[in-house]
Length: 391
Image 1 (tube, rainbow, N blue to C red):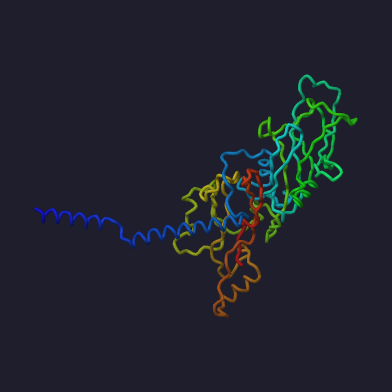
Image 2 (cartoon, helix red, strand yellow):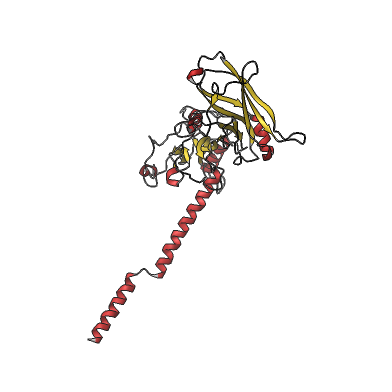
């Protein structure tokens, strides 16, 4: 009986050992996983570098982008984020900042710490939402008022009070309502040169005669008492110096301007299965140089939490052979034509046929939240293969 019990125990132990994965299997499995994670991390890091970032911005929950930034994005980009016209946008970066002071007075302060000192300041605007006058004052004798925006200056040795510098001033109808925009570029350049100069802005409203205006008659929305859609906002246009290696002189959606090469179809947002298709007619078949779909899905990458628009874009890629003789529909360079002839005649050993590569590139636009929850519109050059050719 003891021998039977021992035999059964031994058999159970053997079965248990056999049922477990071998040490080599586990090592290979986890090594493979580690390598896959390392490759993914390295790829994401490299992609962030392409977008000019070290790390993806922190996600602070669902936020609403200012309507101005949404409208600006739709003006400069198509539904896939591709730039409609490279000359529509001043510079390549636009940021929106909300007022951080949230004062009861008509004073505002903006934190510009996310702007690199190397960026060129092109234009800065203060956007204020003017509210309707109160009903009881609707028939006031004043029809216009003078609205002036001042930069607050540091105190001097002779005075403990802050000085101020006039930035912008103009007449505004008293009974109007909506957004009013003032240029404050000088102040922002001063703040970027010395952060200590950023003491904020002051808005003064006066009658045409220079008298004090009733604050109940002229009111601007504040960050404290009004909806986010009406909050005071600074809009900053800059250029980070990153420029395209190619000239975008055509509409990327203009089929006449892009390649006359055959193109694989892609309608609507591509599905996961559509993106993995091999567009060759048969396995191993050699097709002529053409532009193929290459959809970049920001949700699959894990970036949908901070990118407002687009959700992804079609980068396209070039695929196919450049056989002799090269027709004009393959958009060959003179160098590629000569190389193709040398290859065909086998005049020199080791000379390959020309390569199918992008010969026109377009930029895309990203609208996203940065680490400080500011909304940024940024244009990135050379992100979409507009056409392909044999080079």
